[in-house]
Length: 110
Image (tube, rainbow, N blue to C red; front, side, top):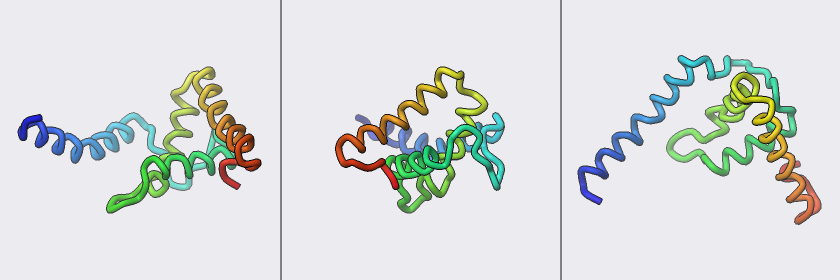
């Protein structure tokens, strides 16, 4: 990899979060403050918060929990996902609990 390619990647990586935020806001995908869950129930939401924070932890920048990734996912599931996509996603969340119950006799969180 050449130095120029590395600099392009760094620049793109720095600009991407602002671009995604702007795109989501323009598309109406950013939940309003005081957001009420529409698709996820409380347990599904709690599971999603833990899972997304494991994937995008807080470092020098906010993690998934601080940036309300769970609410964004709920907005997408509610307004953009088809019924089949929504069912598939929720089935995957339920599978996480099934697997942890099988292995450890308890839910993923709880």
